[in-house]
Amino acid sequence: MRFSPLFWPIQFRNGVIYILDETRLPHKLTYIKARDYKEACRAIKEMKTRAVGQVLLVMYIFLQLIKQGKQKDLTRVAKAINATRPTLSFKFLTDMVLGWAKSRAPLEKYILGFLDGLVYSRIRQAEEAGKLIRSGDVILTHCNISGLMPLIGEFCRKQGKKVSFFATETRPYLQGSRLTAWELKRQGFGVTLITDNMVAAVMSRGLVNKVIVGADHLALNGDIANKVGTYGIAVLARHFKIPFYVLCPPASRLKSGKDIKIEIRPDKEMLEYQGLCLAPKGVKGYYPAFDVTPNKLITRHIYLKIRDGSQLKAKVSP
Image (cartoon, rainbow, N blue to C red; front, side, top):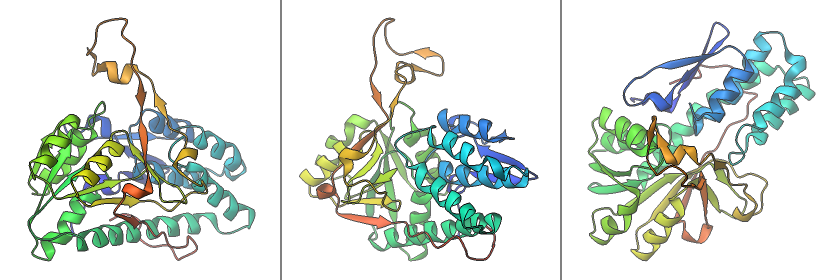
């Protein structure tokens, strides 16, 4: 089974964390180095990595801390991680590690066990999604699901099912065009790029028949938070009677989507792109990075089932 570089975008070698710089794709496949937790947290804030990359980076930050003999700093570092971005619940991860430390568990073994379980669980999640697809399906996706979309395609290909994709640009960071379209094309799948405001037109013409998106946060009632624009796509999918599937993480402790804190990114990120001014000087911008899609609009949640971190160490990258 082939994996996209985005499936496991973080590596740890000789005490240094290597982070795939997603802001440089598709023009350059390059890694940046994080030699301590401050550099790693900065990479999260600056969206050098996102989605599953953030989860991996959190765990590797703790692993690096242990290797540096700084286990006494676990609580302080956990607070720094939790303060990076509000919508993805890092506290679930940091509390888990702090809980292991409190119980005097072998931290390195537990962290590596968790990561090994995450590899297995992500593969199973893609496999479950692949079972929902029929030969000839055209799937619309929004933003990027860290290597899972081409993996879903690989499972379909293995089963003799032909599948192609439509990807939204996903403005303003263009994860759809820079990441999703890149990784799907790289693995030989047909992919058509559209702007975010073309979804209704594409659906009305019958050009797509399924929607699969990811989620950064899952509430207990089934509401999800994902890249802004997801909610609108879900509304349109319901209108056109198109199945809307979500690849989602384990649920947090929040009761509903109303309780999820939505990150408001700097307006400069939508008013400028790579140094190019996109609007007249003095114009204000509003950039909520996520929106909430209610459970009632979701056809099916495809859950990430993470195994217990106490399992034995194994190879933790595909």
